[in-house]
Amino acid sequence: MSTSTHDDTVGASLAMTWELDADYITFARFMRAVVDRGLEHDSSTSWATERMSLEGLFHLALCTHRERGERAALLDLHSVIGSDCLAHLRLARGRAYVTAAARSVDALAAARTWLRERFPDSKPHEKKEVQMSFWTNDRGGWRMSRSIAVPAWSEITGNYPQDVGTQIGSLADRQFDDVHSGRLILWHGVPGTGKTHALRALAWEWRECAASTTSPTLSRSSEGRPGTCSTSCSKTTTMTTTRAGGC
Image (cartoon, rainbow, N blue to C red; front, top):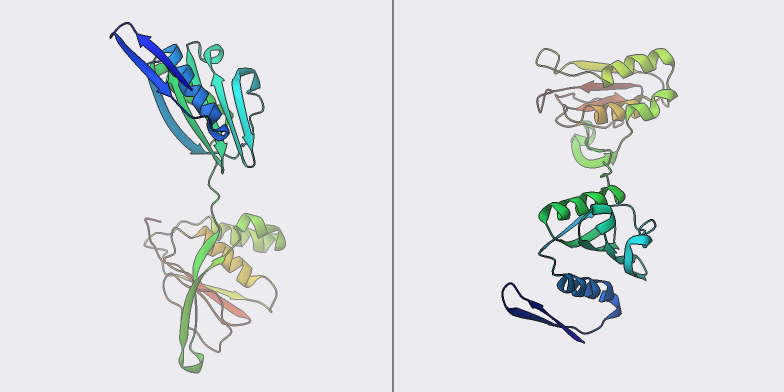
């Protein structure tokens, strides 16, 4: 199939020839409409979005395409932009891909803004993990490090008595300076009272201030060091902090 258009301003003709592929029919029709209308400016962009539906856009769609995990549409945005503007929108694998053409670059910017409002950017989900070092002086001493999932203090505060929760909460909100860095916090209680869980929550809250963290190990003795959390036995847990990253 072929089509052609003539530009009187430069005395030139543009001819287009394309093969029809159902997977790309919306984009082929977009390109043909851009040439037919003589739209001078175009741009392409993409962004991550959780919305993968064309609902609410069908009244603007000149054509659409659907297949498993993907949606595409040719949109005429004149009624919402106030200027001649076409946009090809493809939704696939958690991203919106947009190519737009318009009479002016201002209309292109308005089209992008309008579409991003309807397909909001995905917010990255921060993984709550910290690097933990496990170590002991038993059996000649050994040390290993790995990332472990940890809770935020706000997620577990209800597991503790109010007076204990208040005291730990004040630690979670603490900002350390040169005067307060390197101090030792001693935890004591019978097994199962939540010492280690609270310790890991603090490791998350202090992730920008603590250079490293150490999760409890069952050993007869252990050495605390700046920037580590450690335990000496099943009944006592210690944590020290260090100033890092301007905290």
